[in-house]
Image 1 (cartoon, one colour):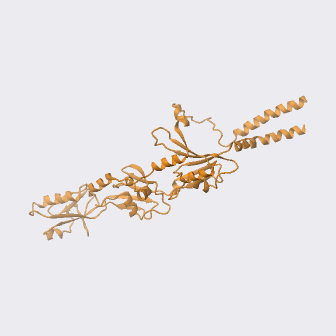
Image 2 (cartoon, rainbow, N blue to C red; image 1 turned 90 degrees about the horizontal axis):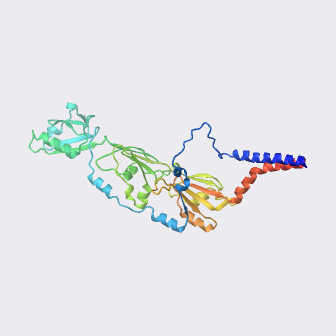
Image 3 (cartoon, helix red, strand yellow; image 1 turned 135 degrees about the vertical axis):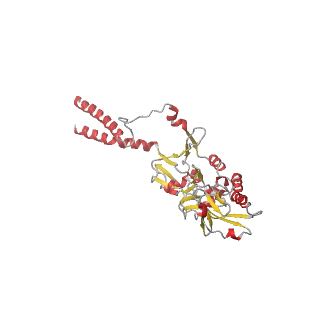
Length: 376
C-alpha cells in the first residue's frame, strides 16, 4: 500500500508537470523575452485595452442611430466657387496660338527666332517658360493666364500698331496632368485644360470603374496629402462634399475590393477572409459565407464585431459590437449591420466547449496514469 501511495504521488507530480508542460506548448500561449528588447510604455493607461474599448449591444436603436449618422445628400459650395474662380495657368510644353486682327503678316509668322518654337498648331512654350512673337520679342508666359498674356502682347504691339486686337488661345495642353490608376478601365495621365477637372470627372475620363473596384475607398493625393473619397456616396447618395477640384500632380487611385478584407474567426464553420462587395457586406452575410456559426460549441450570445476607430475624440479607439443570437430573429438585425474594412467578426465558444478543450488536454495524461495504476 505504501508502495502504491508513493507511485501515486510520483505520478501526480508527473501529471501536473505534464499538464503544465502541455499548456506551455499551446501555440501562441507565451512569448519568451530572453534576448529580446522589451519596450515598456510609461503610461499604464495606454497598455490597458479596457480604457480604449467601448462595447455596444446591437439593438434596433443602435442601428437607427447608425443610419441617422450615415451619408446624406450634401452640397459643395466651396467646390463651385473654386470652379468659378478657376483660370488655367500656362506652363512649359503648352502650345499657344496668337492672332492679331488685320495684320496678315504677323498671323503668317512661322519662324522660330529668339528661342520660341513653332508647331503646326502654334508657338510652343519653351523650358524657361518663354515664347517669341514678332515685334513683341521674347515674352515670359509660364504661370500666367491667357488674359495676362494677351495684355502683355497688346502692350508691346501698341508701339507699332494703333489699338491692336490680339487673340491668344491654347491649342495643346501639355504642361499639367493628373494620374488616375487602379481599378479603372483606362488608367493613365490626363491633361488639365482651361476647363476645371473634378475627381468624379477624372474617373469618368478613365472609362469609369471596373467590376472589381472598391468605390467606397478611392485614394486621392492632393498637394502631398492623401484623402479617402467614396465615389459611391457621391453618386448614390448625393454627398457632393467629397468631390474636389484636381490640381497638377494629383493622383487618384481606385483600389480593388480585395484590398479591403473582413476577417471572420472563432466558432464558425469556416474561418474566412471576406471582401466587401459593391453593395456592402452585412454581419449576417459574413456569417453565412463562413458556413454559419458552429451549433455545437458556439456561444450564441458571443457574436462580436471588433472595429478600430482611431479617429474618436473620446479615446475609445476600439469599438466592439455584440449581437445576441439566442433568439434567431436577431439575424434580422444582423442583416442591417453593415461591416467595414478591417472589421473582425469573432464568435466565442460556449463555456462547456472551453471545458471540453481543457479535458482534451489532460485526458491523455489521466489515461496513462490509470493504465499504470492497473498494472501495479
